[in-house]
Length: 341
Image (cartoon, rainbow, N blue to C red; front, side, top):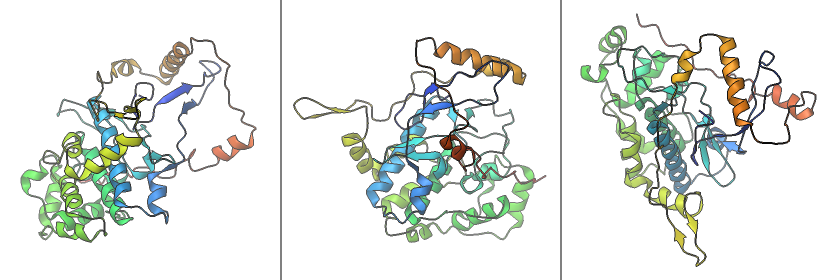
């Protein structure tokens, strides 16, 4: 996927280090653009975030997601730590370890062990066997709320408590809004005392929670994924107009300044892919050895031009620091889903 992406707001591979031999490699090193921080570090920092920051960040997240969804790719782990940011506030979506191509057949099972719990959509929390790109939109809504209040919107200890926190805000869902939930989750919800929605509480998230901001947030945090706003429609919301203008005035690579000093704007501010991502070749791989051979062949084909070979020095201080860091060994994993049945 990293070699497929060509978008300002999606991290892509600039190069890949050639493994020494097809039978003797345990890891792959991918070279990408350097981005100095991520959205999680920015949110928890004392750095001031004004409404323009929030709009620019949210616009770029949705712009990158539109591109991914047009390629039929579900990210399935959108969270602040997976949104890299450079010193100029340019944002790129990263970490595609849980990403997959969307499954058009609603009868085919899709794993529920995806999305870090705090950003997990209610249909996954309730054991849905199939889900869509709407799960990414829910995650963006949680991040939007987090940008407004500088703290995690739904921070529970386990999936059941997570669901309870969501219903405290959205109210008890209607039966038809739980159509994708498993029977055990539906019965749990029906046994709980009914709750009334309290969406007006979103206005208390902070001084930047304006009417337009809350209006968009309410359309992202919708229980029924079929009624949740799409990325395309979210990008068309008036709240993001300032973010779009600021981004394309001085931050993007698709627009440019002419010799006369005028800004030449692209006709398509939020481009889609020319063609969807094709994962058919992956389905033919049935063993670790086959995966290694295919990866080795793929990298070798990309390295068909003369170049100075690059390699990792495992004895260097920089490598040792990296190998012992939380970047190399992330401690946070998506928790196992609740067993409803």
